[in-house]
Amino acid sequence: MEFLKLLAYTLILNILRYFPGSWIETYTIFESMHRPMAEFPDCFGFTDADFPSSLLYNFMMWLSVTSIFHVGHASIKGSLLFKSLVFYGLCCMFFISLAAIYMNHFTAGIRVFYMYSILDGLILFTFLGFVNSILYPKFFPFKI
Image 1: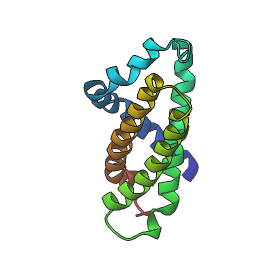
Image 2: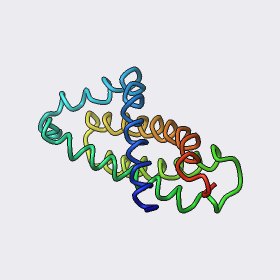
Image 3: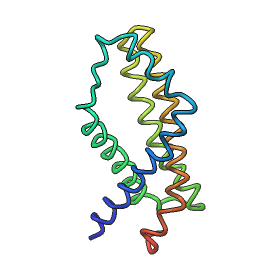
Image 4: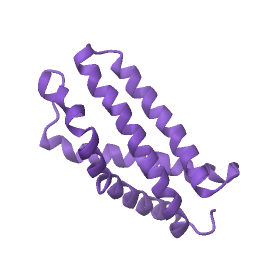
């Protein structure tokens, strides 16, 4: 039952990642981040058919982050906001590290995409870390 609750909670976080999370991206970095896709079509092949798998991969990433927080938040002291930002921040560092590793394998034009991906990670992990600190106690009141 706890796992199903965690799945449902992650689904809600994932929805919030897109609405209003995608609005934040739209007004800040979206156009610049996706420009390399048009400039280097041989390297980027994302189509509408890839969208469902992209949603699944994003869900799995946020399920991982949420699970790490769920298992580990009792191990540190502080407010729920502090705990949430610590765990989401650590996961963000991992995300940024992976983006930087992949960025290093491409030409300067394509690296722009990864630089914006890193900035996108900073925006979204911070946003969802804050949201998590508000919503988590509503789903798991005895876990705080």
